[in-house]
Length: 160
Image (tube, rainbow, N blue to C red):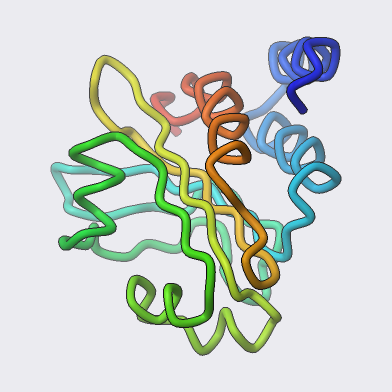
C-alpha cells in the first residue's frame, strides 16, 4: 500500500463514493490484499454518550455494524485515545488482555490485531481494527494504516 499510485487510487475512490458505507467498503477492499485480515471494523467514538459505535464490519455475523459498546479505560484506551498511537497485539494472549469478546475472535481465527486511531483536531474520533492470524501485524503495517485512517476522517466526523 505504500505505493503512491495505490494510495492515490484509494483516495480517488473514497472521494467519489456516494455513501460512507461505500467509502468504508473501498478502504476494506484495499486493506484485504495488503493486510490479509480476517476481521476489519471501523468504530466511531462518542465521548458524550461514552460509547463506541461500529460504522463498518466485514463480518456482520461476528461483529455487526451499528453495534455499540462502552468506551473502555485502561492501557488499550490510553494508547489509542490519549496518546493517539496504534496498538498492535501479536498473540491470542494479547487479544485476551484487551478484548472482552476474545473467545469469539479466536473462534474465527483471529490471533493478532492492529488498532489504528483516526485523529481529527488532536482528538481520536475512531479506530480501524484489523485482525488476522498470529503475529500478523507490525509497526510498518500500522504506519501504512494510519494514512488510510486519515483519509477516512470525514466518515468519522460526519453526522449519520
